[in-house]
Image 1 (cartoon, helix red, strand yellow):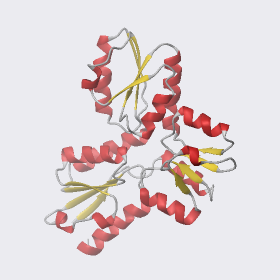
Image 2: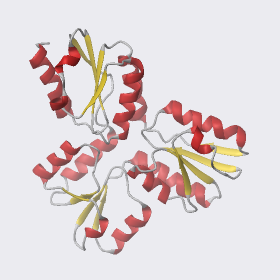
Image 3: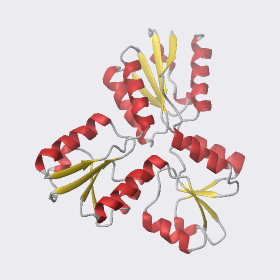
Length: 277
């Protein structure tokens, strides 16, 4: 059996930047998980004493708080500033972009529509910047229930599928006088998705490596599954089931934007050692 890695996979710019920031701020803590990969978070804690705080009110004057890559709600950021906490912002610039758009367009009288997962920390943050509120939708059907005004501003969660975002835009455009569509899906997401689509069309089995709570990893798995029924979402080599590989000739591998190279390599090494690839 042959192993082939996708042309684009793993750590994106925003995650690399956030990891570097965390490593440069030893003895600090992140507000919420820095990235959606528990094993990398554990490494930062072990090697750099970077802790994890789930409630921003725990921080006290003099503490160093690292803002996670997904960003945090605007009011919570303001509260942290008031308490005298040293804030180190590791919010991905691709996430900062829809935050800024939501605030500007809301202030200019547009109804802000956000395509994404309402429970995801990125979307909670983006929504908080819309001065006059925003609507979060996950599919075209969600739009049918909304009473929107004539002027619409549309943004997307950075890790969503382009095709699904276009479906939302295509529904809104003929129904409203003005619809401004902003491309807030990051380049890395688009490139990784295209690479998975290409590889999964020829692979006999696909492995998508990443956190089970990682949105972009789940999107990659969904794309892989469309083209290769033998697709599996795993967090590390411990979740491998070697019966999956029986009779397979090509194993394709990709990984989410929060998956470090060392985890990917562990998976490859485990397969090679067991199957003597």
